[in-house]
Image: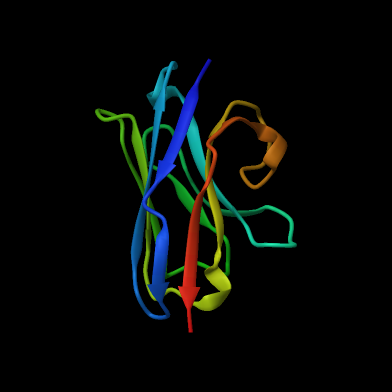
Length: 124
């Protein structure tokens, strides 16, 4: 069983930055593509960013492109989400997940292992 844990959330002012971390255990981290999703209160969970197993390929939701950066360190079984120029609309619970199925990267059902989420709140 793969265990996923996010950290690094918090309260930040608009325009500020946060870096989220996601660690995994119980599996072969380097074999998984990893995705970041978020869910704002009262809204559906949405794709934010993803990174391939070796870090060679990334993609982002249009809403975060040029502001967020996803990276990974397979030696530490950790994936990161650097969030810059944060906006109040970025406020959400952010989830990290390991992709196990051959689906589009933004498809939630393609990810089998999820963390518990970390709250990011951006004040105006």
